[in-house]
Image: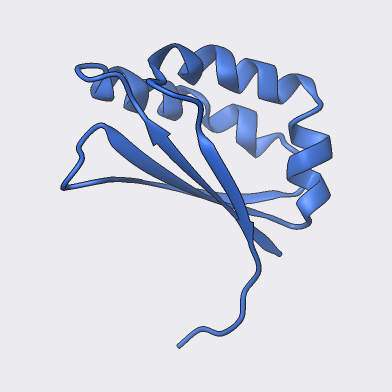
Length: 98
């Protein structure tokens, strides 16, 4: 299992529109191979900044199955217009939990 962390800065004033678009994208992720969960958090200090935490069974489920398939284009069509800059994406593996 891997965690994809995405930092997204949204155009000021479009935060609620972005949140609606993410909600509309639920079915896209639910049908994506290897997808397990998504959490979205909004920064208190920088209210136009969001972080998405996605769980995938494998790295390839994100980088190949999702990113190279039609679900990615559908996702970007919903949320992309709200981006102030390209998202920053990082993949993490679990080391420990308490």
